[in-house]
Amino acid sequence: MKESPRFLKLVMLAMMVAIGVVISPILRIEGMCPMAHLINIVCAVFLGPGYAFACAFTIGILRMTLMGIPPLALTGAIFGAALSGILYRLSGGRLIFAVIGEIIGTGIIGALVSYPVMTLLVGKQGIGWAFYIPLFLGGTLIGGSIAFLFLSALAKTGMLTLIQKQLGAKVYDKSHHSNIRNV
View 1 (cartoon, rainbow, N blue to C red):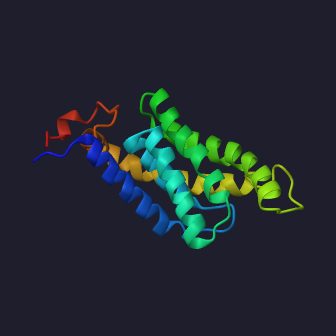
View 2: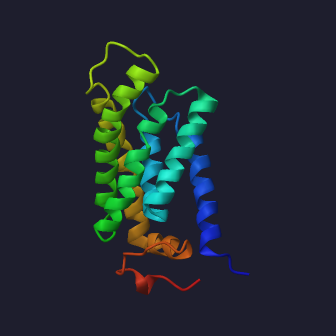
View 3: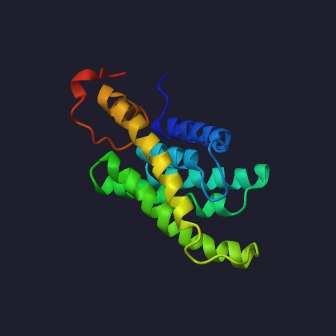
């Protein structure tokens, strides 16, 4: 029995959320969570911007409730995840644009949104409006580099296209069709 692409997308989304929660403490300091950016980009490429946003939002809520992470878990993830998927699609499936979307969405937009959230809602005083930009950019550059290398390796072997096809996602990579058997 062949599973529906929608069901497989939900299973992949659940797996990405679980992996994201488990690996998020790796290399983490406040305002810098490179593994979250890795998950955002991979999810955006595998599933698209809506699912990437849902994944980042769910991971953020779980990290805040289970690990006591401040609201940076949300502001530092949701914008980059969505923009990663949007730029990946707008570029016709170029991986570098998924990374650029994460860098702009999290490193700049998310960092700027974090300032009022942390000062007004959490009461963290004594920080400037650009305080989070260097930390968020650093995290996105590390996580984005890892995601780019990982997804490039999958693309080179044809596995990225195969995964996207199995998930019923938009497939852009036409160069590896001869290496992929219909499953």
